[in-house]
Length: 469
Image (cartoon, rainbow, N blue to C red; front, side, top):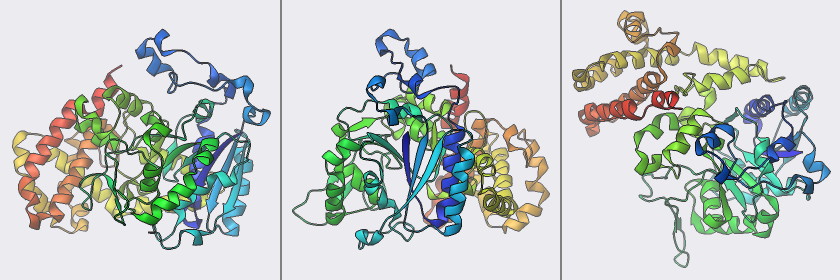
């Protein structure tokens, strides 16, 4: 059995159900767990065929014959660690497991954790739920070797069983590298000590995303990760909560770096095109690895607060699909929770801001069809964002005519190329940001920033990735 854990409360129960459903639906029923143990050495493979055949071909596998009967048995056991779940949600999860087990064997277990242990630590969204992942080993059977932790804001589109075939050796955890973190509080990605007898911890080039963790449970316990984590949380200023903590506690040599497609951040469809090979996209991955991940995702992780999948972020994948709608396709078919999600989807669809964003983004795309249009952007932005959104929605100028000139329709945005789609909405958000900061002179540099954005899309856009073998 394959153990996967989540941290979720009542507010995120429905989203947890969607994630669980996506995992089951993405499990290839034509394959058995044993099939993932066929190892091939990298030296005997053509590098091009290596990337086409498997995500983890080059990684060492465990000896299948040495596994216990329970480890060989097909099926997922999902562990939901929570501070509270209502009786209604619990009942829905019971029926969800029964319905999904008809597709592939699975169980859902609910564990309640006392959050008083984290009293005094900075909260995230008003609770301590994010820290519950430290106690995952307590809820997993003692004879279990590995467990996968996933954040709730994810969508699985590939088979996860390949991860459980990995031989992690003495590595404590399998991780996917994150962006280099920078913010106004720290010019360099580092953890600042509260006391002078502790040194600051520099994360430059080593930072991983804690939303995906493949735990090697024996090593996790052996290295006293929980005890060390509480020590760090007590003596350092936490900017990114548990992620900062784990990056400080689990050093580089104790991590197994996994391919980016297992924790693909959707903004990578936009920001990964911004840099050339020498800059590695602000990631510790090569362009070839990034291109493969963007074409062959396994897990989408909607990390940013403004791009949660249930809020319909405007990001298009290599195949020209809005990845938020991919999530909604699963959500609206999630057993026992579809009724709740259907109501939420209808409200989202009826939201006028959605149509407003579409129309303005496409209009801005039309405005920059020629070079001079970029220099007119400050005036265009002042004219658009100075209006009430309802005026935009009623105006013919922002309706079908402007959209058709760009090759699409207001309600048929997929007619645009993936690159144009992403550029249109990235330009929209850039213009919106510059308008909001116009008093600081951001409108003056908008044309140059927009030109630079366009050059990057033309040179490194996802159209190039889609057309390359």
